Image (cartoon, rainbow, N blue to C red):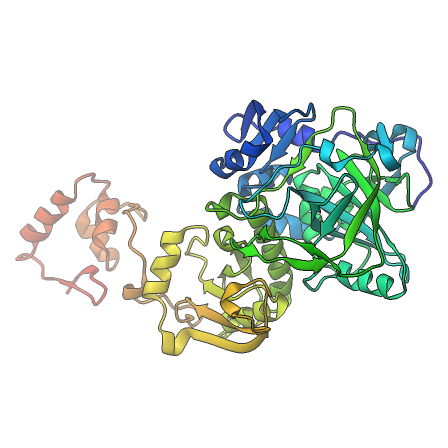
Length: 512
């Protein structure tokens, strides 16, 4: 890390509060107060981000669903919904930069509580789902360091409140953090860890990425700006100096021994009680005007949730990166958020040679274990439109010809359809039309009808237009500039006996 710099950047530029202030009333629901018991229901009903100024008896504002729409994620990245995965992919190529902020100037350390001063139950943490084991801190970004490489590992984990200074953490699924913890606990050592609570959606996207290297740099790359960092007050971890809250502590060395759960998981079902490590709090630091953050997870409106939208964008970016080396011209990638943002993926592809659609399917199968179904379409299909995708599936697909199935693939353990199996099947749907030979036009029966556009050359008369060559009825209307097709019909009838007319196999009019 660089030494402290006297020229600090704007330490509010990427803070959560400023992002919320950028949302208009169509994107943000402001509520003066609400009981903590009602927060989950309020969030479940709202497709908007929600800001509650006084949650329960706390004077710390609480926000939820900040990243719960593609439009809000696009706003964070200053781009459009359609261009979002391409923009994130581009930013991942940015070189990371860091600026170390002195503790005295770090906004996230304006208020510092240590040891017995810390109390997780003083934070506006609420019960999220009816059968959850306890209230959960659900929007936390975790920071740890691999002692062997010195790299920072960044991820997103939930914390189940167990007491004022203890919480459960889910480390069952395969992950870098689980591997690091098993290594440290196997050596009988505590593992320092810190959690940022209250972060810009950009930082949450960075935390979901799985790209080898020091993952702290992903926050800088995706921001497109130097990342201000500060050393924790009770360990040596470097964390974002502009976060709303940092909760410092350690995972004890006892291993996976404490019950954690149940919890409403991001796939839309409950996760059962599991044995997991225990987190111990050593410090809580925050801004003076901090906003606490909760994430929407699971429930009947999956597509509105933070986790579904974050997972969907991560899936799209990882797939886009994989496709860049597998096929020539990717036009778009979309992961449907309603199923958790990872199982069903749509790809728009301009094929240049036969077989590219199949190559794309194979590349996606191998790039992410979570993806189960891949749909590849031509660029004329809007991958964000359910109706157009359904039309392509119904009219461009034959199961015995266009279905690609691969069994025995690594799968997402939380997928209930596995019925306890450790591997699963993936299906690819080639919804592309037959590839055209160079210089040829698609047969009429494959062309998509659209309203007349009346384009083409103008002529002095219909007869002159037909002398020029065969014409569709639309072209005959355009040729004379008429705004009434009935005139053409009358002319065709009146001229039939004077000079024989015919129509070719595509229905164009011409003289015999």
